[in-house]
Amino acid sequence: MEITIKDLEENIKSLPEDLYEEVNDFVDFLKFKYSSTKNQNKVQEWYIEETNKRLKYISDNPTSIVSETEMNAYITTLKNEE
Image (cartoon, rainbow, N blue to C red; front, top):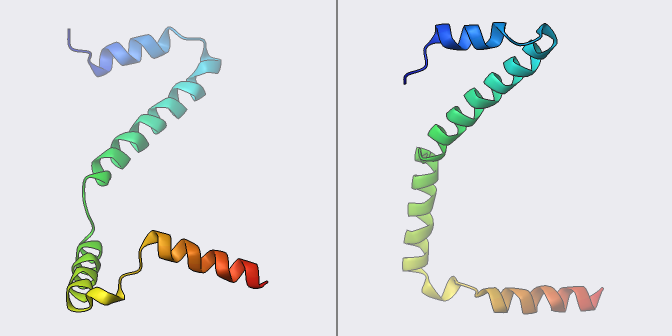
């Protein structure tokens, strides 16, 4: 069964008026959730460009990469010097 705007209106009208604000808040939440989900799948062009730039740099300078282990060791060293 397809729900129509009329069905929604009737359901809302059957509620006590003090719940209208809650219903409206929920509708706002659904709109936000829907728009957020839609935008999550869309990768921004600047992000693609930046990723490509970084991949090229890594390809051109493979010795510039620092592993997570090396970085953690360096940070630990810095903390120990304090």
